[in-house]
View 1 (spheres, rainbow, N blue to C red):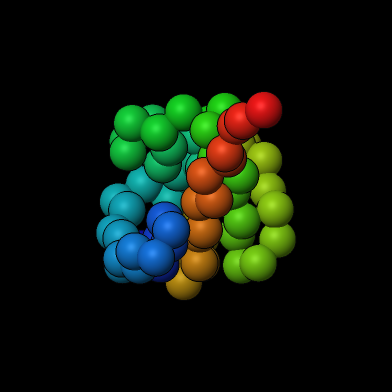
View 2 (cartoon, rainbow, N blue to C red):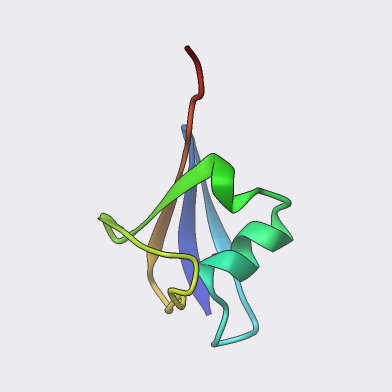
Length: 67
């Protein structure tokens, strides 16, 4: 199973062996805190429990904190 992953300007094609991989699982595998990003799947904002499907485009948008 493959999907496209976009983090900032970097775009990679990723392979997953597990058909039940969630956004949370992806974030854990990349050592990214779910509190530091907003996740889009095929252009729509999704929650951590969303399952990644073959051919999906996942975009991780870093949240910028400041004051």
